[in-house]
Image 1 (tube, rainbow, N blue to C red):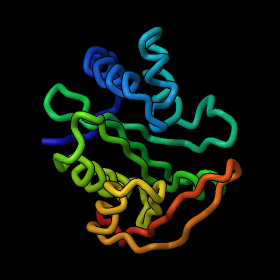
Image 2: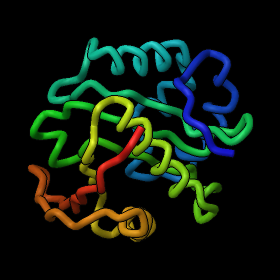
Image 3: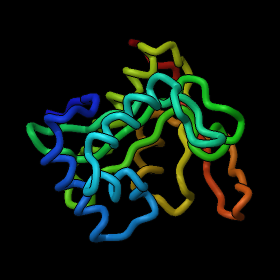
Length: 173
């Protein structure tokens, strides 16, 4: 059964296994934390915790609660919730984001992840979250639509790429 967990030192082995899988299959969603984890996992934990407190954020970043998506002892992905994204992040990332490990895709984890993240976002006071994804990410688009997401708009980012934004129905904690 999928659950959200805040990253901790006890996740080292499982996180590194997931990180290796993302890194071995270069994907745009494999962020720098995966590479850094091999060199300094303790630093990754510190950065995740700092992001949740709004400390030492990279330029233009917003406070973000990051979660590991766990099934037993396996990291099947990660998710994040940005309670108050700035304008730039609202256009490019929205309130909620998640990525599922390649070997765990098409097994219901995306739907379960979004369900848990919507519930957690409601607990944080976000009643009508915006979710953003790439227009060619058909798996996420299908999940968003299946869960009641309503098309909001398509935006062009400064780098010329586009994102599709969806307004999710009101969530209840």
